[in-house]
Image (cartoon, rainbow, N blue to C red; front, side, top):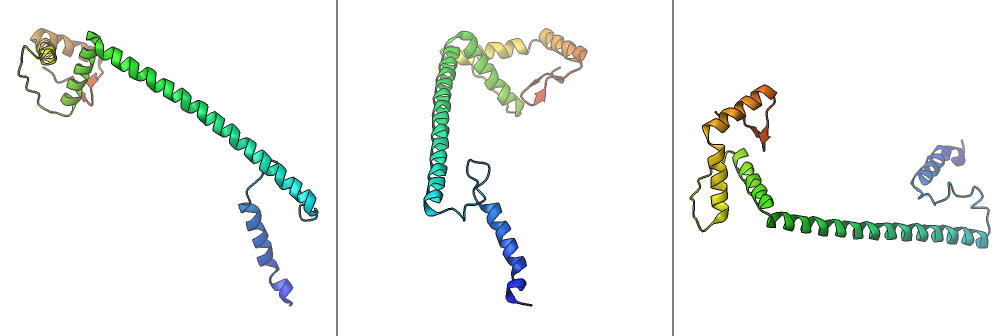
Amino acid sequence: MTTRHALAPYAKSRQKLKQKHRPAPFEEAPPSNLKLMNNSERGKYYRQRRKLNGAHMERCVVALREEIAALIVTRQVQRELALSQQRTPLGAAAHIVSEYCSMFSHGTPVRLAVNEQNATVSLVASVVSILTKPRLRTEQLWIYKTNSSAHSCGTRSFKGLA
């Protein structure tokens, strides 16, 4: 057995590795006669491939810049909406209620010291006083039991309020 035949399987597996890891150009596959081409033809092929790669990269950059611009506009709109909602009484109350719900969902006790100078604390105190009225609590229990679903504020349910 000659060394040429002994190394033949290794040479085939090496060719398969080269084919797997070769970066594919934008065309389907490299021309089959690439090794048979003269230098000028091969140079034209690689210049064309580089040109296609460059054009593709430019298109990607333009698309990404457009996406960035759209995301910046979206972020500005969301900031403006958040600010405008905080300025309205309903937005401020919703923010306070969501904060209260997040604190209540983790079992954090909330002790309110009502101060007339602080409108936020008095607003929370009024919401808490409304929620703790017995009539409202029994109505809530009746609603939740008839719907047979647990409405939640955060992760805990309100089924056991009474």
